Length: 342
Image (cartoon, rainbow, N blue to C red; front, side):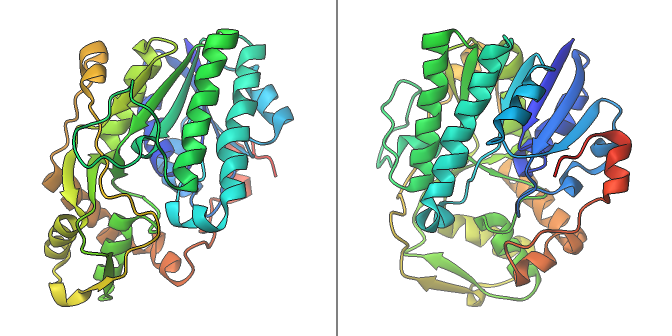
């Protein structure tokens, strides 16, 4: 039976993955390691927080002693923890490098020392950089253009080097843009949805023609789970296959779902280093792992908007202070099912 350590398991994607993992018959225990920064909240885990299979540890992946202690108790690590917001990386490049590169190295060192059976490193399509045509395969060069993407590309290479140098059974996943319930409103879909639901305006950079591939978070988590169970060590797997949209096309759908019009949208100057188009070829994951996305975009976006409409307590305070800490489950409650570390 597998004992899985999930870093960043109280974040948006990580929490969805933890809920999925707890349902797996071959998983005995799941430990979430999360620093509970502004984008991570125990509330993201919902009822899963109280599963007898789950232990929660508040801590930082840069804490080598804590990471070593946890790795000793597990058979696999799935590594979601990361600084992930592009705009913030312009102002805080050092913290992105520290967490995304050195934090990954600390986890890899611990996995190597304790002989873990699998290490899944979760990354992004942004490491490939912009493509005006075609789609990036797992064999293409990495050409990141912003500090966030550069830090993820560096961590990908460090992770793969631990496979080739030390034999650590590393797999890397690279996903396209995720969306779904519970995402922090610094990202475009929850930002636009929450502002529109409050009757506020939104802004589009440039001409709104930047292209992204949108993948429901549950489809990404399905792909990561397939890599955890059947991925070949030393391999990279692109996980995408959702829907390509320009930001303007995405905005049109969100306006309709939120009952707003184009008078709510203002076009502003493009931001620095705003890559025009990302695109990945995901045939490898389909052929090797049987991975296929299942969520239709319209259904997924409708579900997402409905969640934000029904859960204003989860996001309304963040419109006032985007980096605020949301109210957490009490420490007394937390210690009933897991461990907390200050």
